Length: 366
Image (tube, rainbow, N blue to C red; front, side, top):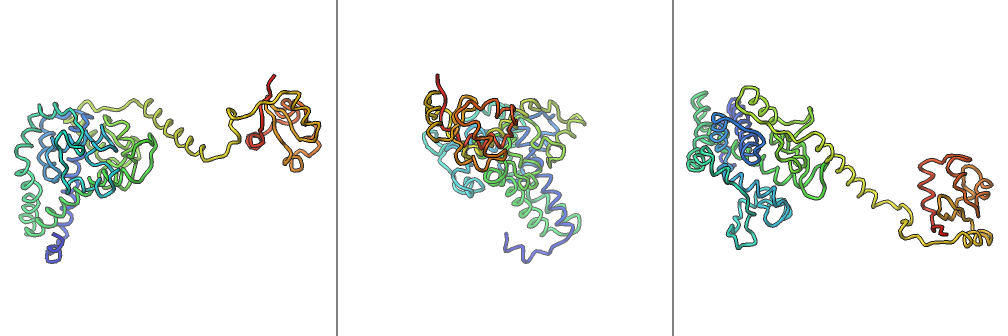
C-alpha cells in the first residue's frame, strides 16, 4: 500500500474525506464497540446500534463479538498471561504483535486468553448479524464506500480506494492500537499505580477520548473517559448528544464521591512512594530504650542530650548552629525540654521538627 501512494494523485477533497470518514469510523469503535457493547456504559436503540455495527465493521478491527471478548479479557486479566494484549510482553506485542502472531487459544494452552462472560453479546441480534456478515461489511464500508464517495463525488476512484479506504482504515486501526500500547506504557496514573494503564493525552487525541486509560480501568462502566469539562473526549460528547435525541439512554456515571476517593488514594500512594525515598530518621519501632537516670548520667558526662516528648535527641552537632543561640540549647541538655520546644520559649516550625527527628536516638522508659 505504501508503494501505491507514490503514484496515486492526491486530491484535497479526498484527503478531507479520509479524515472525516476516519473520525466517523473511529467513533463507531469508541462509542459502539467499546463503551456500548464491551462495557455496557449506556443503552442504545436498534437504530444507533445498527449504525455502529455497520460503520464500525469498516474500521477493520474485527466483529463486535470478538473485539469485546478480547477487551473484557484485557480488563479482567490486565498485565497477566491471560491478557490478550498485555504490555508486559513488550510494546510491540501490545500494539500489534498480538494480532500478527496468533496465539494458541485452546483452554489447555498457557497462551489462552482468559475466559469472560459474553452471553449478552450472543443474545444481541445485531451483534450476531454483524458477526455473520462481517467480511462483507468490511469490504463495503472499509473500501467500497470510500471509493464510491470519492469517485462519484469528484472522480477520484483510485484515491478513494487507496487513501480514504486503505490508508484511512489503517490509520483508525493504529489509533486504537495506541490505547493497548502507548496508554499502558507512558502517562500519568492519578487513580491507581499497581497496574499499567495510564492517562495519555496523545492517545486520547488519536482515539477521541479513549486515552484517559487510568481512569477507564478504574471505572470502566462510566460512559465518560475524560470526566473533567476540559478533557478531550468527543466520544463522551457524542454519547451525551445521542441521549438528548433519544438514541441513547441510561448513561452510567460512577459516583463522584468514589471517583474522588480513587484520586485521593492515588495521590496518597504516590506520596508514600516518594516518602520511602526520604530519610526520616531512625524509625520509632527501631529505637532503643533509655531510662531517665541513664539519660541524665550521659548528659552529665558530656553528651549533649535533650528529651522532648519522651524521646532522647543528640543535639551535639546542632549546638553551635542553633538559630536561637547555643546558650538556649545548652539550657535544655539533661532536662525535659518538651515545654520549651512546644511553645514555652518558641513554638518550632515543621522544618525544625523534621531536623530534630534526624537527631532522635532513644525512647525514654520508666
